[in-house]
Image (tube, rainbow, N blue to C red; front, side, top):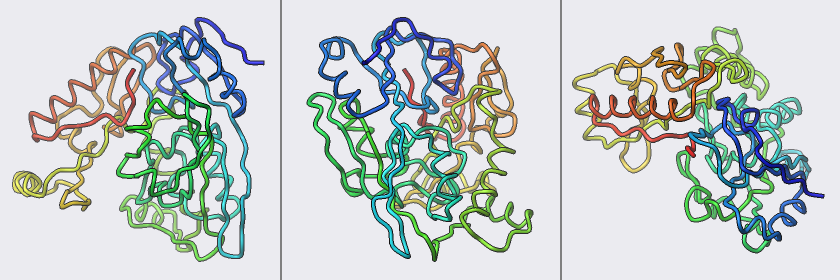
Length: 340
């Protein structure tokens, strides 16, 4: 039996720890729960928001509608052979716990994505990535439920139209569907280990690791992230607040003349990717604080809630940072976080 609650605080359901309230709140633990909810007049009469771990969300005000909390769990083996295993993972599973489950079993492909907060269902929406790897590399299919008809269908990797922190789920399918599960294909041996990211190579060397396995790569990534990024349970944050911008080669060469040390990475379509954290730090924002809203002292890409910041204060800080980067570098920063 579905339970719909009134006036529920969302503070425990987001990693920013912002004190705001949902007009209505409903936790679902199965696909049938969601289908039952969709069939009610209540669902159709209220605006709604699907919320997983809330690790990529900033609420700037109370949510005047229905928040649907995804608590659907389960990991199923679809098929396997000596080389690969195919897993169907329910969307409410916590992403890092999925990674740890795979690493423990020596299944390769997502070890570079260790310690990323959020749920399995959020991973394809954002096409999460870190340390040279994106989740699109291992996604086989994404199962979705149409929120207007309750019909379940499956999208192939190609149909998801993945890009840098992009997917079809952020565009025409946004607000229209619910991701119920994601199917991943992982390696059981002959893993395609990726150590191309500079910080990862350095950390592996510091750890005296010369045998690269899903476990050793995961350990190194966790070490990096733990040292550089704040624990959201101690200091509210949503990880990287901005995307790393991709700029035209012409603008990059102009900036390189002025800033020879500017870090950069090649991207598609004759674009160059610039670390947003470097841009923010060069504008003097690293470690800055306005009230309880601030920029993390060790990673300028992370905005933090020191305790009692409102969502509007965090958002205001982000706009000040964006304006500074635009003025100094003529580069537009785009939030990676979803703002409501």
